[in-house]
Length: 171
Image 1 (tube, one colour):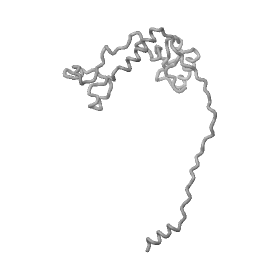
Image 2 (spheres, rainbow, N blue to C red):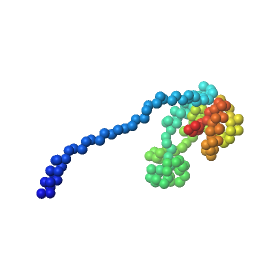
Image 3 (cartoon, one colour):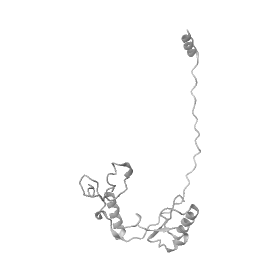
Image 4 (cartoon, one colour):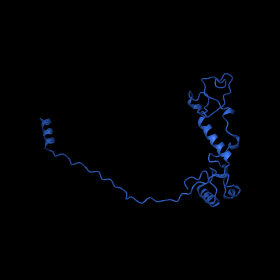
């Protein structure tokens, strides 16, 4: 008897109206155009440019050198360590082991240590250190311990002198 009353009650009720979802759209503003300056490029010889390109191509072909048995023990990590043990299969150059770091994977010595852009990096901690930088071939890298206020000052000074800052951050 109770079941009949319940069904009758449900049949008598009108279906609830569907709620409309209203989304507020922000008024569309015109895009703000920020004057972007092109990055400063180094003055490189044709030979150096070719060597940088050759280095980039060799990096693409180079295998990922990983520590021996990195896949077996999680605590080892993937960072390269030279195999030293007498019976180590990687040291013995077994075919089924990953490649080792060797001199044959080296890059051209003329461009070794250069930033991918072609600049030589100079570490900067103070504004005064920008004086010794040659903007044609060197770029500044701000030290990690430099605070935000001094970092801004260094970036402004470098911009006024035409020096490229490699890690300017969100300035």
